[in-house]
Amino acid sequence: MLTVDELASMIDHSIIDPFHTERDMVEGIETAIRYRTGRFTTQPIRVKAARKRLEGTGVLLQTYVGFPHGNDHTEVKLLQARRALDEGVQELDMVINISAFLSGDHAYVEQDVNAIVEAARPYDVTVKGILECFYLTRPQRLQAALIVERAGAQFVKTSTGQRPDMQASIAEDCRSMRAILKPETTIKASGGCFDLDALLLYYRNGARRFGASETATILEDLRTRIANGQPH
Image (cartoon, rainbow, N blue to C red; front, side, top):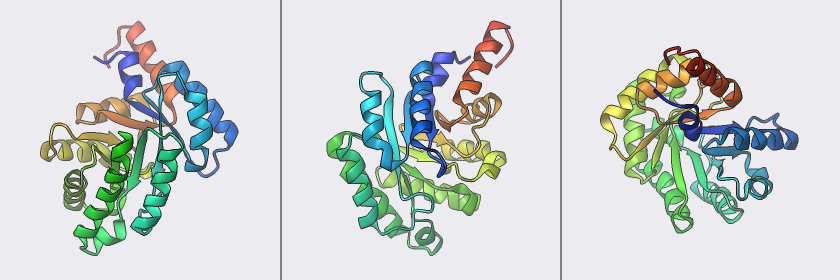
């Protein structure tokens, strides 16, 4: 059974929606520090300020590249990535080029992901490839996951989190991906991490990282269940 600290270490506390303001970022950082989440995710424009606030806290900083559909030119994604890397980001989430993938140009998708992986390598920064599973069939999701892994990304992520209707399929996606990916490739569940039961379901199906904004509620629920001797 997971402890509160163990689950917190797997959560990327995410304040990334278009309506999230600078104040939301500050409050999000305070939550991440209070609960000792593994990472805090912010919008690219706020990386520099967030890194300063997180200094010495033990919470790593991450941001995203190519949101939400991944269809920017590779050069544009590289510009985004390099700016974030120079400003101190410690993990990068990037969306694969969904249009190129659906067009059958899998070589381009792999090269696109690999370009970000190579840009991040000198900084010793981890890269996650986001599939946005909503737009793909399950066979396509698995094929895309293998492309991301082959391109050198350390993580495969199910979604940007911008599609709240993804929750029903994430567990099966995690289970299916875990069966085909290398053990060292981590699966990050995102897009349906709204409550503790969802995270525990994804965990049982192979996910070991979670993108969530309801972090305080999730962890307090786990704390209560442990205190009451409830199964979790």
